[in-house]
Amino acid sequence: MDIIALIERIGEGPTAALFGVITGLIFGVAAQKSNFCLRAATVEFARGKLGGKVAVWFLTFSTALVWVQGAQLLDLFRQGDSRVMSVPGSWSGAIIGGLLFGVGMVLSRGCSGRLLVLAATGNLRSVVSGLIFAVTATMSLKGILAPLRDRLASLWITGAQNVNILDALHLPNWTGLAIGIVFAVAGMYLAKRNEIGVKTWIFASGVGFAVAVGWVLTFMLSQVAFDPVPVNSVTFSGPSANTLMFFLDRNSVLEFDVGLVPGVVLGAFLSSLFSRQFAWQGFDSMPVMRRSMIGAIFMGFGAMLAGGCAIGNGVTGTSVLAGTAWLALFCMWIGAMVTDFLLDQRTMTPAAAC
Image (cartoon, rainbow, N blue to C red; front, side):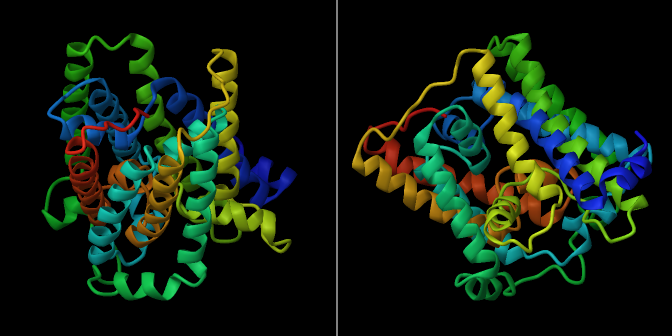
């Protein structure tokens, strides 16, 4: 790909947005086809099962790790240049925000990425929850909730930059790829044991591949662009806020984030349309609506505090071995499992599957 020629033709901002659309399209199609959802995996695990939803999550997680670490070893990408690694990380934000996000995604019956995909397939519940998530994320980024987020995040920080797990443990560079392969083997074992079809294997892996595509494309752009370009990939906390502001503020500029969200929506919509899975759906009852709205608020604030959502931390951040991302992912699992136990398992009213 001749990125310089593309920049000269349409400009740096539109090129970044185009890369966001490409990444989003891949993610949207793959996530819709595979039913990828961290919330579904955590709930299944919390109920003592290592079923299909856990297998899909393992396939996605491992694919992102293998592709990104492979690109790192081939000099197609430098994880040290990524935005998550080049800024201070927050251990306190990862813990508190991760727990809040885990609680919120169980209440909302879907992680933020899954809500966006479901919204594109006609699920009005996800439209409402997704908008509340985006508004809360915006308020946490630069609005009334920003001071609280800053205060909690500053309780315990990593230092001048985030922590690279391999560097912290003095491990060789190829260790990241080896870890990804181990998770891939576990994912394939679970997929085979649960008799998951080949198409689901492919599309679950496609979600992780989209993360690698985003990293490589933004890195390549950063190497030739005149203005500084953030090296990032798939996440839905910051991009949701930035996309919302893009349509509200006439002074906003095109960037990767602004292309990512529409790309995901378009990919998921087309995928559901061609497979005849598009269907209008709404809230089952007022209590369900109230629960989902509260969960979306928890997710919006928790994601911004943790530095990313279930995708931004749980797949994208972990793929570059950011210490706070791995901690946030762990806390998301804990928050989700505890919430499922207290609200759904004990009351014998299982939440609907993603």
